[in-house]
Image (tube, rainbow, N blue to C red; front, side, top):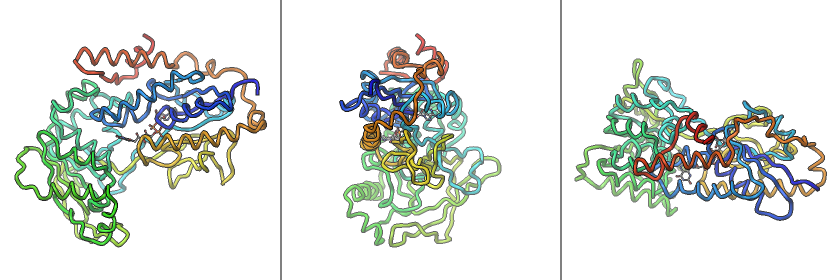
Length: 449
Ligand SMILES: Cc1cc2nc3c(=O)[nH]c(=O)nc-3n(C[C@H](O)[C@H](O)[C@H](O)COP(=O)(O)OP(=O)(O)OC[C@H]3O[C@@H](n4cnc5c(N)ncnc54)[C@H](O)[C@@H]3O)c2cc1C
């Protein structure tokens, strides 16, 4: 082959960056990679998901950033695949495409009252506090001012992040890279009580111990185990054989044993409570939950015994889901792109030149590092396929570059570096490492210098 293999990676989150890294870390086939993202800034949920007060995890972006400096790798930001350019168009420019566009939509609870004012998705709240350009700056200003008591539904790390952000004092959070309007809205929040609601018990929660423990270390907020914290049932006892589960149980048990905590704000843990209805006329006035019992497999079975938790807002944090992209097979049940080891399949037959990695390949599970192994697996399949001469001739990529088709709206790696610098300068003015630029206009004008 006389020219380099041309690969487009759609999505610059961890899976996209790890895929670009793997493609350019081997010597068997020369590869040029364009990492395309709909946003002007790269790194996906590392920037717009991972909590801003978790600095060491967010610093993964420094590692991902180095991939953009590798020979053969380009960043094409501000390009929405499906809107600015179709997949069909991309296929004329590249030999292979790896879809790594993530799973960033929220899952619904499917209960009455979900659409009342004051009932929101954690995805929106997280997007807002991390400065995602699609969120209006005042999206939650009124919400925070008017809410004193909020139910967070879900017992995973995102629910913990949201609870912690709602429960911290201004001093505990004002050093982060959150946009200024977010810090100001959080500082004028009226929230005093957060109720975390989970269908099952402490042994079945998916949060990790480190994140869970942090809830007990907040300056002004105590943790109260309100209900369902017992773990005497056979399923919980069996689950506790796992050390990580046992640690979580111990953290909850420690909170349950405390009675002298005088911190004025509260996080209430409601285990074995299945949300059945959000009540209210036009706004949220309460959350009705049904007590559950665990069956032998640890599944939650309703008991018919219901009660209301008095809250004036509900944040649902019950998972993320992927969306279909036009022209790509999609598994509507699992909300992922069907694939075998990263090769996209349609009715079990591989689609030539189309690959997938990350959350849109396997669903929203695992930690950032999980995407590395996942992307490496996909790239191995791609390189194995590309070893066949037919791989290049089958798709006939147009000799013209994609650049002409995309025009001058693209933010390249240089543009991203200018955004990065502008954010650091803005942060320095306020005595912080960085302040996130949230508006697309500001991001684009920073990118253009
Ligand atoms: C709130 C939250 C907090 C988290 N905290 C942690 C944590 O503390 N530690 C940890 O290990 N993991 C954490 N995770 C998980 C981690 O972020 C994911 O494992 C990881 O980001 C998934 O990577 P991905 O590349 O598949 O998707 P993403 O990170 O979502 O990247 C997808 C990229 O595709 C782009 N894109 C989407 N559609 C298009 C399109 N049509 N055209 C072009 N580009 C497109 C997006 O803009 C985005 O940049 C968290 C996740 C969430 C949601």
